[in-house]
Length: 342
Image 1 (cartoon, rainbow, N blue to C red):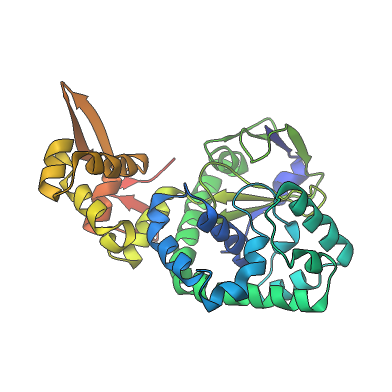
Image 2 (cartoon, rainbow, N blue to C red; image 1 turned 90 degrees about the horizontal axis):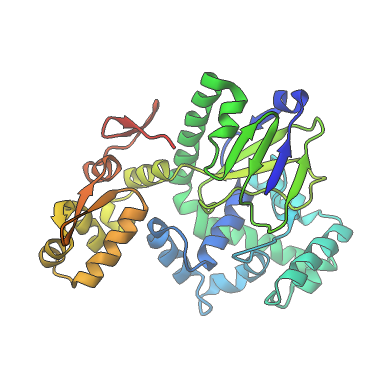
């Protein structure tokens, strides 16, 4: 359990990040690439990015250092996510990190992750060649992996921000904090975060510094994230609403490209049919259809109900919106006429 303690001054100094943060998205997208169990609707992006980052590809040699610094689970260095920076100024801030801080944070990474690759030690010593390699890695990763999809990432984050601002108007910061994530609840000046990636209980006292709320496209949906060093300017990184991401992505890409042709066809067929019927019409085995249906059900685009000896599948409002190409409007996310809320 993480408890974040707010004073009246802190509540007056909460603010959202103005938009997408290049450096949080860099680290968190690398986490997604290195995870086996990441969001299924990122599969298309992951396949493309992994091909580009294959060990035999030239891009991999350029990006090895930033990948090594971003393990899929656990600690990664705070200096990789400088506050409130554009990309170029942020890279300069990272490369200007004092040597003592480099040694401390990379030492923590090495202590918790035995698979840190060669080259990290030289970065911890602040060697110019290693710092230059880190700058090259950040720029190459941005240009090839993030930039091609930055428009849809930005659109999804901006839509999520619109939704949070409606909560702010309706109920103040208490409602914003209380609806930020299923694992978090706000009461009596304290945000209680049940799951935050660390096994121990801890207390973060803001002490009048306020809090920056950072929406993230690539953040895992299962938990919120804070900086490891509580003395740094406090931030709380949260995953954007999955329905917003799905619909925004669908407005930028054909549905088959987003979730795969077979899964797209199964979503079309899940209209009151049972698993065997869907498998027969789609031309796949029943076990394969069951796996696809499970993924769709986990992402709230179908529901499944057992009737007698059969399981009947039905497309949800979100699933219908995907099939019909309904997207994100300025007023929020419309899901077949139903506003998406948590």
